[in-house]
Image 1 (cartoon, rainbow, N blue to C red):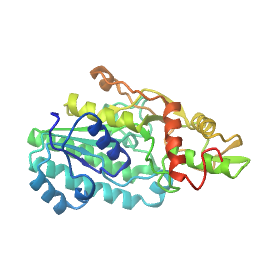
Image 2 (cartoon, one colour):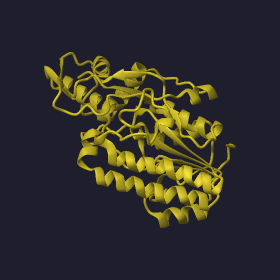
Image 3 (cartoon, rainbow, N blue to C red):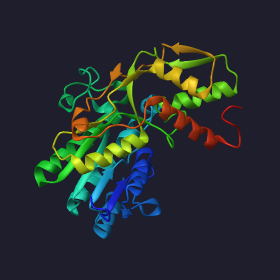
Image 4 (cartoon, rainbow, N blue to C red):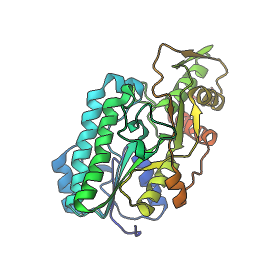
Length: 316
């Protein structure tokens, strides 16, 4: 990508989309298009087509689409699936029709089969059922991966799909329904500390293991893949290390300063038992993460505490 290439981040207001926009600016890309008020509704095919016809983006990152944690996936599976399918059907074909040089569609690690061997490798996609608590959302994301492959085969495009580990960091969604495990634990540990609660309940057994990637590292990996990867198979974007939910909860409590007891509610769903990515292709191309989990959680909590100020201070 040359510095003055027209680059469109579909979903520039999303958690990862914002990070990609910021990374592009930091690396000297001067023509990010369709940003802010100029961004079309990515679920509206007509609006997206008009945008591509008028602006002609050369490089496209697709991060748009509603998402949620376990609670939101259980409560609103149809809404999540429909929104993401609309994004897939609107943005990816429009990019092909209007001559985009390259497109990166960002998928989620929840698209891997629940019982696939660890760590997940792209060859394992479609070999079994996904985790039931997120199956509707995962099916829509799988549709995006498959459409990228289909357009690549039919039209000879350099469109690629990437599969991300669980992202966390400043600007994440900390809400009750939509937060993922990292942001949700930070919010709940903070509230428990402020309330001097003696016990903090954690969903599930605490034994499932997840791979967490700091959002700035994920943005960096997306730009790296856009520059250096061009193959039909999706590429995993991960850090190569998993952490149990119990260990994550203890680390979050230490960062937040909560000293009460952790109680694991085993009546709540665990989700997939283990979710780690084989990111050897990304490593072999030369990418490495720069954030470890503790430093990333510290930066995330600092951001969250500032967002709450002046109502309360981080160590009130």
